[in-house]
Picture 1 (cartoon, rainbow over the protein chains, first blue to last red):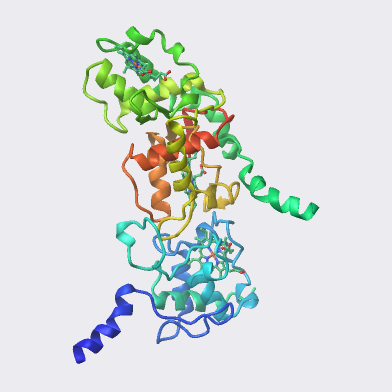
Picture 2: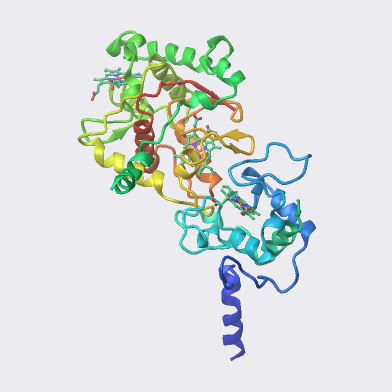
Length: 141
Length: 243
């Protein structure tokens, strides 16, 4: 019985995707038990090995050079969107617009030809999503 | 009624999206350098390729004559050979190397193969691409088109989401072009050398965290045919110069 319970709990962790509920255009409930950390989120957004958000987006930071403009600037995103709205847009923007260019950062289902090194794992963990949300929610202007 | 007509025309308009030559997306400095053989390191490969053309027994020249006779050939590749295989320029040269020159293959991405390919392709420089896509090429073209249009990789992006929808925009330090193969083989500063189109395609696959196919794989060959078709009327730029 204990074994069965452990297996049940372990299943979502194995898939690496936390369960979440979409209400309207947002995911209101955080994906992780502990609150996100904006400083960690700022580092994740800049990280070229994982999230690599700056290939497509600009952030308000004069020290960053060569930021992309495929997506809108993230300056002021914390005033335009609620944390819940930001969470859904980072978790899986195709839930809002099937044609979205913005990649889903917390999804493993329905992807094709994923490189073996990344198979079955989302780009960002639930905790990393929360860190990114905390950082973006703080970008008020 | 007019509204209905407009609606019916929409998909057509999207399909006829404008494609611009790859050099239009280069920085002015790189573009000028690409046009100037004396400042273009890719020309070292062209020179080496022209030397190889005259070497060996029998040499390429002994069958084909002066390499100037290769004018226009690159505008027609990839092409379906008599045995039904789809060959890009590299594969066509390797076939002559093995079957006609009766020597060991140069090998994918070898300096000799890049050099000969660059030397042959540059004889079409400035000429408009016009790859045949009817007859036996048609099925290959559709395979390439399907690959081009499919979202793929952990980042779930199709080629067109970058190279059609976002051409001209910045992806970090890169200006996204229409993703044509017309500049290949190309000298890429990041590679510090010459590289094939398939090597560049592997980089795009890696970029979206998708399966990288081997050089010469069917997936990239059919894709190359589709890219050549997309590039219809665009000038051959090989050897290209890229950052």
